[in-house]
Length: 150
Image 1: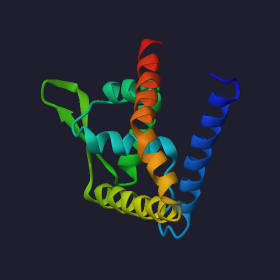
Image 2: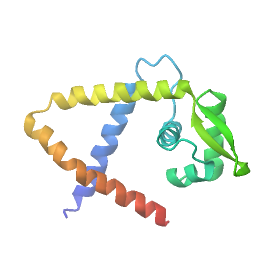
Image 3: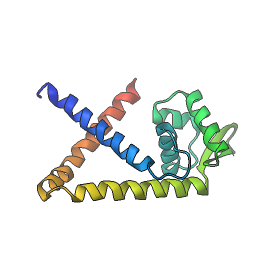
């Protein structure tokens, strides 16, 4: 593997993500959510009822950091904290209707933005991106697995 490839790949992925975030911020009529807040909301969307410690493990964050995020998001009307019936000291997290709408809007806007720009590529480049998706997913999985080990 050429020495420059991993750095070029990481730069391209980070650059794309940064540009998508910046473009999606434009036109917001509500205060923007930070990256960690969006990650937590998306996790709760995919795993309703997740506990704070499980969320911290999934996001590779300290438990107190996730607790702080939960407190902020609950205060802002995006998360509901329910008492776990099996352990009254633990909380289970659910999205509010406001959060569901906001995430849905964000996902729609992101799909439209990326779709618009992918459509501007020629067919060979679009096919190269489609072909690269499984490898990119495997790369994400190995990065996630390594983070789980540490």
